[in-house]
Length: 178
Ligand code: HEM
Ligand code: HEM
View 1: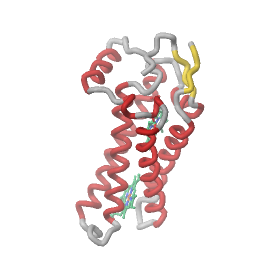
View 2 (view 1 turned 60 degrees about the vertical axis):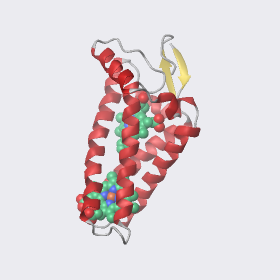
View 3 (view 1 turned 90 degrees about the horizontal axis):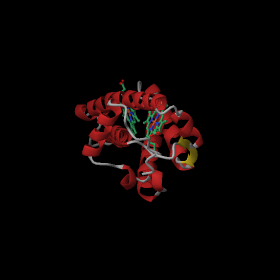
View 4 (view 1 turned 180 degrees about the vertical axis):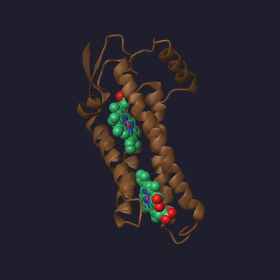
C-alpha cells in the first residue's frame, strides 16, 4: 500500500461547500425565504467553479482524464458484480458519471430557480415545477452517490469520506492510476 495525494484542496473545499449549500437550499425552500436565493446562487457558483476546475485543474480533477465511455462503465459494473473490479486511484468509472449527473442536476436546479425570479418566467408554472422536479432527481442521485461511496469504501476497505477530507488515498501497487 502506498499513500497518494489524490484530491486537491479546491476539490475538497468545493465538495463539502456544495453539500452544505444543497442542504441549506433545501432547508430554506419554503415561504419565499430570501436566504434560499442566496444559498442557491452560492451552489451555482460552486458548480461553476468545479466545472472550470474540471478543465484547468490537476490530473484527478480533470473531466477529460476521468470520463470514460458507457462501454467501459458497464464493463466496470460487470466486474463489480463478479468481484473483480480494479482499484482506481481517482474516481471509478461509475462514480465519474455520477459526478457529472450531480453537477448537471444541481446546475439545472439553480438555473430554473433563477429563471423563476426573472420577469419573463415569474409565475410560469412549468419553470417552478421543473425546479422542484430536478430537486427530487438530485435527492435520488445523492442517495445513489452516498450508497456508492459506502459500498466502495467497504469493498476496498478504505474510508473514502475520510479521503475526501484529507485528500489522501491508500492504494495497492496494482491500482489503476488513471
Ligand atoms: C448534496 C449532496 C452531495 C453532492 C451534490 C455531492 C457531489 C459530489 C461531487 C460533484 C463529487 C466529485 C468530487 C470532485 O471530483 O470534485 C463527489 C465526490 C465524493 N462525495 Fe459527494 N456529494 C454530496 C454528498 C456527499 C455526502 C453526504 C458524502 C458522504 C458520505 C459524500 C462523499 C463523497 C466522496 C467520498 C466522494 C469521492 C468519491 C470517490 O472516492 O470517487 N458526498 N460528490
Ligand atoms: C441546489 C440549489 C437549490 C435547491 C435544492 C432548491 C430547491 C427548491 C425547492 C424544493 C423548492 C420548492 C419549495 C416548495 O416546497 O414550495 C424551491 C423553490 C424555489 N426556489 Fe429553489 N432551489 C435551489 C436553488 C435556487 C436558486 C439558485 C434560485 C434562484 C436564484 C431558486 C429560486 C427558487 C424560487 C423562486 C422558488 C419558489 C418557486 C415556487 O414558488 O414554485 N432556487 N427551490
